Length: 229
Image (cartoon, rainbow, N blue to C red; front, side, top):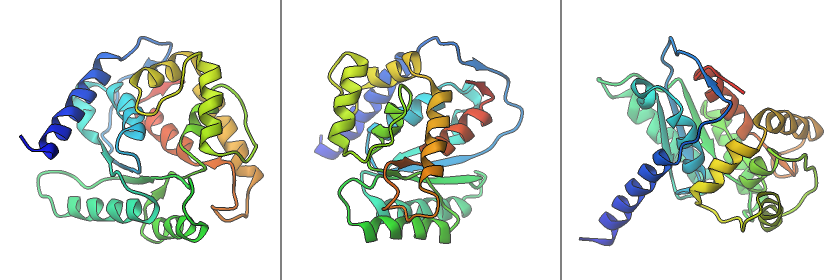
């Protein structure tokens, strides 16, 4: 068996484990009446897919195919380009409807300002929703527990999360997603993220630090699933 096949099977096992780890929470799910199709192309191969696949798992089984999560394992401009390719490929499929919303989820991290800004520009120019974060996706996790408007790097987010969660924060950990939903406050996170955007209104994406647009996607998904939060 090739290494590529092993990695593929390993990730399938990983997603099955995610399904098993679903928790009972105060989130209430109503009946979905109308289908809407989402494509989410994420920079990370696992971190972001774990989170969005968890939200996807809250849908009724017959609606699971309405959200496609693609862990691109790539960065900035490349993630947006892959989003465009996957969206256009779907347009030529006769048996499946086109995507209603296409999101590129990527981080600033240590990438050059120009490349990060170009990814945001490219997304807007091609009808792709930009779910970018400056600096890292973990900012979204932190906002579930506290407001943070200090320009710090991703390693600082890890330390904050480790303190909040009472365990060492590790990327790609299914239990982290469980704790975020169980112990965090998603409504506060959305409000905090909106405040951060307002604080940096009129600035370029690279100069807006810290800022995340992940909350716009999360809110769209929760509203689509008719999940009260």
